[in-house]
Amino acid sequence: MRIHHECIACAINQCQKIVEMSLTDENSRRDAMLFSLKRASELFSKDSIPAVVGGLLFLDLYEFIGNDDPFREYKRLSNEMAEGLVGHFENSDLKTALKLAIAGNVVDFSTGYNPEKLEEDIRRVLDESLLIDHSDELFEILKRAGTLLYLVDNCGEIYFDRLFIEKLREEFPDLKIIVAGKAGPIINDATVEDLLEAGFGEIAEVISTGSRLPGTPLDYVSEEFLEVFRSADVVIAKGQANFETLSELNDSRIFFLLKAKCPAIAREIGVPLGSLLCLNLYLR
Image (cartoon, rainbow, N blue to C red; front, side, top):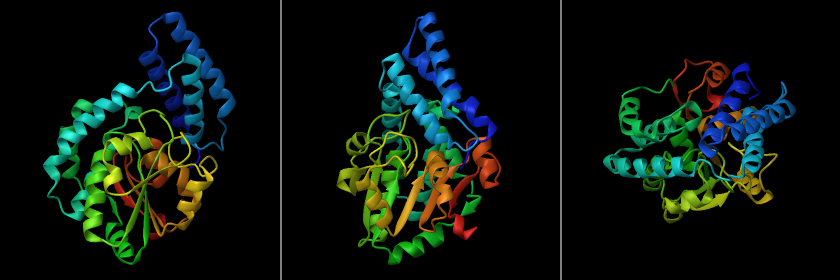
């Protein structure tokens, strides 16, 4: 997916949040925002992929302000609240667990999310229907698959991903499941370290994408990850950034699980803002 007009302002707004979380002095904040504007003007073009150029911008800003993980406390709070909530849903069936994994995608700082609203929002989203629902096709393909690659998105929601993966293991006991996280911190995305702390090593093989950029931009991942990606029978890709970075591949193996939380994503897919999706682009 290439940038829409909202993507540029969204990235700058995200920079402002990073600056305000990291710096208190007004002069330092001003200088950091001026740096962000200058760097954004160098990075963004009409052919840019939002998650890629946004991620490069944020990493440069991290270096400029001297804070390599501004979202550390936010991620901790998101994980703590989600871990406490997910136990209420342990008896969910497979389809409900998939919906919970999508519902967990509300945890996203880039859309101004407040983690204290987590339980309220999860329960509200569970009452909604998926606007596009290719889950039956996904489960049918998994019956014959050997390997599933699961690409996580944000902290917090990973606890709902874990529940979904546990249900997948019960339903498809012969399926090999590989879960990929980021190589290092970027906004509130889940890193390999976050996944291991959340217990993913007990239910799946955990690997790194080899990149810190949001989503899964194949031009920036490691060769080791690329080999795993190419050999997987099925790929489940969580969240908007994974859609941004993988939607142009025309890869029939990929099922996107997400909530269309911004106008650009909703417009790109052709759905109303806020839609819940289990989407395979080949099946539309």
